[in-house]
Length: 142
Image 1: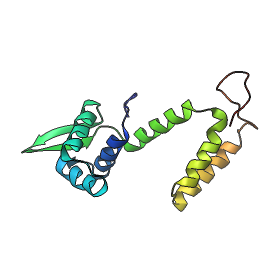
Image 2: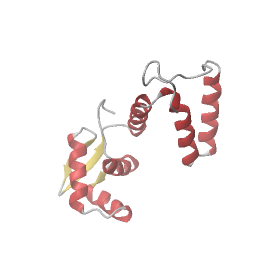
Image 3: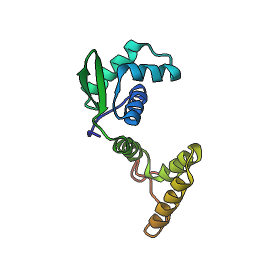
Image 4: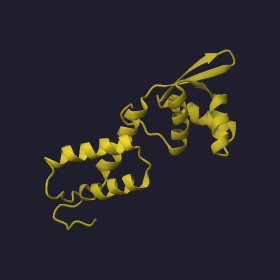
């Protein structure tokens, strides 16, 4: 993902379709989104124009249609958003926040095994306590 690329929640819905299909037309995106949300075609086309302007999508004309392709990788984009979130919250609260996320999402057995291995590896070098990095000298608030 291009550093500094900010994608709105509505744009994420469009990007998820483009990432899944690899390339698609605005008509295909509109059809898929109309099953999920009540957006007018003009709204979807506006979102597509914004994503092209942001450098997240490329577009090429094919006859009367435009073909959209992702210019940013899905996993890299998700990683950047997660990194930005966790770098902006109190370091002392990260563990509880991750616990909440894991509790709220559906994970496959493979995902859970990978997480368990990552946690086991991190346990070797983990500090006994993570300190609050919000205001120096203040008590932890989480």
